[in-house]
Image (tube, rainbow, N blue to C red):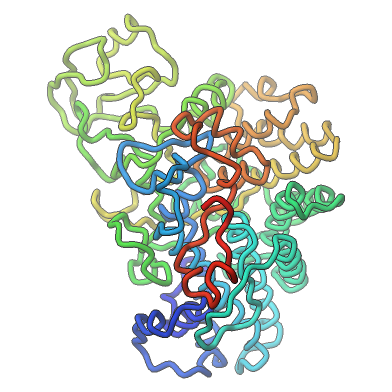
Length: 567
């Protein structure tokens, strides 16, 4: 299934809108462009289209600015850049409210995916021209996806509506279930999926969920449950079992070079990737199921994370915008805590060097006045000369004066000038203005599994085992000849160290906010490392406001579907 998601059939989009209880007037705003009968899903072509539609809803969350905003803004690792909207997610101020359209868009898209999963699960028995074995596998995939979507809803909003059957007609009868009920169903779906998913490293039809992907998600779910109000005494033990299975049973391995994990193109299918959200360079099939916003930032098309982490290099001496260095939207910039504390070791650990761009080569030759480097007044470049260098430390003025280029030191970082994360860069785009990206989003990878295993073991008091799991990740991250220096001892294996280790490994990968939330550390870490929000954040911010549209379209309003406390 590598990059074969199809445009969602309008019938499935329509049914998904119905499930969230919109009025008939709202439903009729969806234009049905084909005369597809309600029995189409029972045909081989319709059944396959429904499967693809269910997967396509992943694109409403992963690889979009909306999904990035609710997972990386407002944490200890990333702050706002100079441009962009929706900064209430970082400031935790009055801008974060129930009227925010992106919250509604994410909410609707996740439920749209859930309703499609429900439709496939219920209708699979009547589908013709498909073997029973394939039906069982596809139903297992839908249970994986349904659990995945409900887990995202649970992490962002707490207990919400949880329909488990296809919604066929508009309804205003919705209600919120408890967090415990959601965890029970998510785990039941994932465990039920295991016998029938492909039991190997990657699906023979690449991109489909496998048993390994389901076990990885189970480990993540049990870690979250273990720190929730629904915790059980064996949650960490179960997380340990599932993470260990992923590491030992499928042939995954950590790639020798951290940077190679993010190689675009054929490199995206590698021995470390457990589950990836598929994108393509074909604009006809690279869309999310429905338009997600009208911001002009490309959320509807492709994996566009390449846009949001870039500094404003293109107005600096010797530089103009090009495809390789990308469009610098300046949305997210690393915090001082990320660059100076989490990545304090830039000598032994390669991940800072391999996560952030430190050098820009001149593509606009000539002589220019300097801007941010006060050690010199003018610079002259030939094409290909170094124009900008970010050393990652406070290089002395005298040393900078000897360099024939501008040096950007930490004291000169601004909301427009900062180290640029390169994990999502997309130089294979058509031209320098083209926003849609073709890079797959690596949702689950093995380094994360190791770190989840370490967390589960540490919380059970198995410090030596946790240390070994972390050291496996750190061994791969070492510069050549620095492996021994990268190994930690059991005395160093603390929860604070583990939180920072996840930051070093997974920075920017749409997971930090949910990590902080499940650890119960969101408020504490924001107060420590996010000065813009330190005075605003409260316990209420561990969940998002329920979209007001959902409350308004529920029979009984806020009485039947109450808003999260504080909003």
